[in-house]
Length: 219
Image 1 (cartoon, one colour):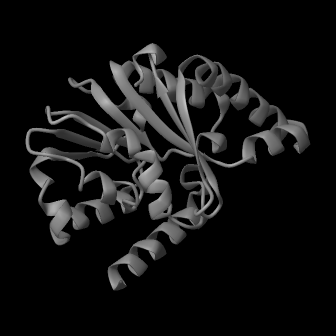
Image 2 (tube, rainbow, N blue to C red):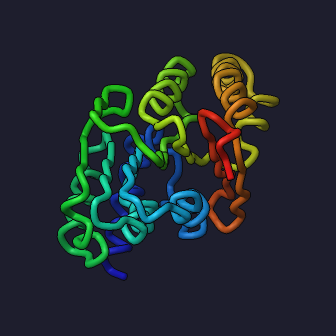
């Protein structure tokens, strides 16, 4: 419990200092973590490659490590040094994390600069896309699909109704930015989305978007 509170305090501090890359003042709930990993949880017994983007203090990671099996590859890409330090400590101090430590690699770099010899069966992203400039959102989406296997699944979340509301009511540069972000995301959602989960037990409530390069391969 104490460690969880300490992690939340780190998250809160980083939100105050770097809100544009954190996106919320409260770490994601276990209900959101369960929703965003539901395709991963249905994995086969064959070894898989998993990429987590923007893990923060590990709200989603804490569920992912319990799904991994020997032979898997788990890469985490996090740009915030304070969060990287929390993640490193959790891989040392928490039993479920220690069990997959040898499978896991933390990369302290922006996602768009991340290079990998692997392609991924599952990409789980906590990046707050609605906070970013539209050009960066476009680059990040291109990076997701560059790293994803043809049969892989990308799962990311956004806070429920935030983008539609802000698109309608925001004015000036802020309104223009969110409308341009929406214009980047909508074609991907229309062409690639295979499922959307509504998660009300989160602060704020969230949508989880699940995408595949080839939606016809979805079960």
